[in-house]
Amino acid sequence: MAPKLYRRCICCQRFAPRDEFWRVVRVRTEEPNISIQLDRGMGRSAYICQSASCLQQAHKKNRLGRSLRTQVPPEIFTQLEMRLNTNPLILQP
Image (cartoon, rainbow, N blue to C red; front, side, top):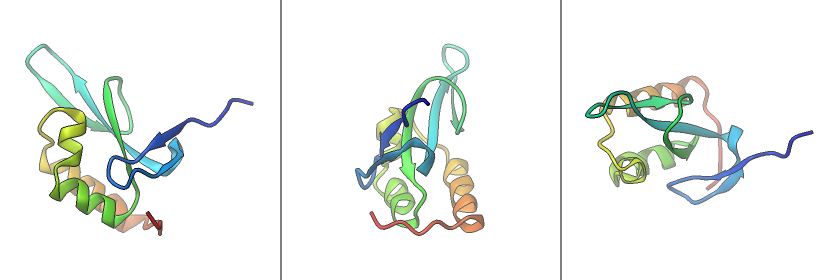
């Protein structure tokens, strides 16, 4: 049995198995183009808790943009908010 992979939230610094986080990935498609994807792809990635407080903090303090070292489009935050509303997970940071 393979060991669980642990990651740290960029907002609350909670250390937990990778399955409990959302993964946001910076993917370089062509040399000048950079795209941001959710949950898949190879490239620089950041992990964020599936909680409203961490999502709000990541958006307000630009934690996601600083961690990925690029500008994060507002559509990514909209998609994460929709995920939060459809599958609310109560976590205590």
